Image 1 (cartoon, helix red, strand yellow):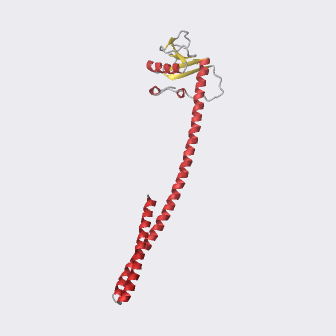
Image 2 (tube, rainbow, N blue to C red):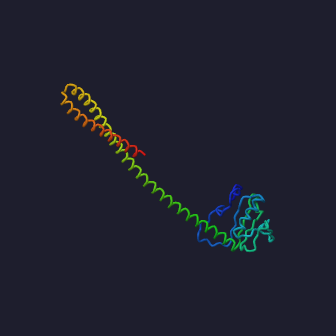
Image 3 (cartoon, rainbow, N blue to C red):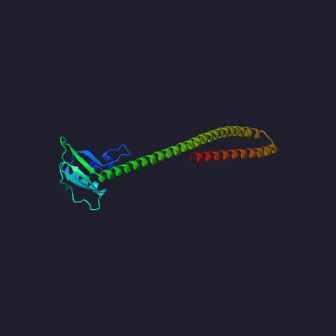
Length: 222
């Protein structure tokens, strides 16, 4: 049964309900709809005219006379639909009648729409399953990358701590060397200076390695 709100949106076959029996042999179809305004009747008639059904109005089902609802009936339309305006004991109802081949055509169109809807539903289900699978695979990849990144961060952190310890030890050694130097002879001072230069070189090398690891960490975080 129609609601007036249906006419606020585009009319489709879906508004006429479902025919459950696919092998149904149709000779005549009649549909009861909630009484609608004259404007809405003309819109509904235009819809049927656009899909091949010329539309006519009859006051009673028993009447032989009929009249056009509007001037949009097309000579090339092969089918008909009748709007029965008065149904005995049902003042709030209008009846739509599709006689003979018109009923067969309306049923055929409805079945075609149902088949198309089922195919679309299957396609949507398949697409959703594919998307779900792709998302799950990507999530696994992301988790694997995060675990690897966490491991690298941990290793870099350990290396930085080791470098900090070496720097502290080197500072202590410098102080000790300076103290010792003051107590050495000139010849011994020269040897000491050479030793200190080598030590400074090692300290500089450690600093460079620390900077390189820091840069690597930044790149991995990016």
